[in-house]
Image (cartoon, rainbow, N blue to C red; front, side, top):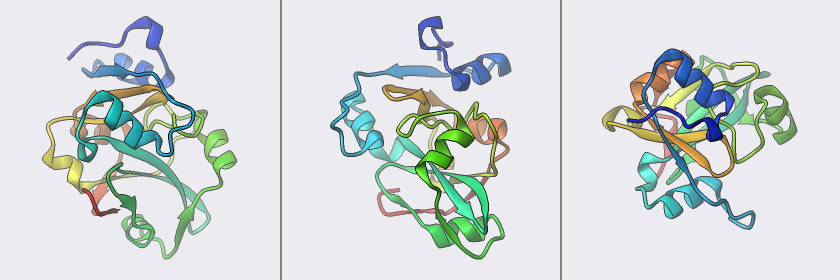
Length: 165
């Protein structure tokens, strides 16, 4: 895998470069009219949606957390809460998610967030050699080993996705 290219630098790619983690940037031309950022990336890049993961900010019992699930499915909020030892989870307010991470919606990466949050990666990622996650801006996904993503984010794994994964 290649290292980041300077023109594509984001906090996420900077974290990977600093850690010496191999990754492949996958830039693409983002369509602002796309209904789903993650499905758009999978389609434009020609990659199985089960390998492209979306990063979702959730509120678990009043604390922000990150769920990383395949774009081909959805986040199971009850499973997300349980994975973090909580009782109830809800999607975080979009403005709160942007402030917390330093990224815009559709470009929120699990890596290089302004304020890191507890992270849970759907366990289906473990069966894959590499996965793609947002690279920190709309129109950039990064491909890396799920083990490296888990290591760098301090994530735990659990079955938090529904459908498609």
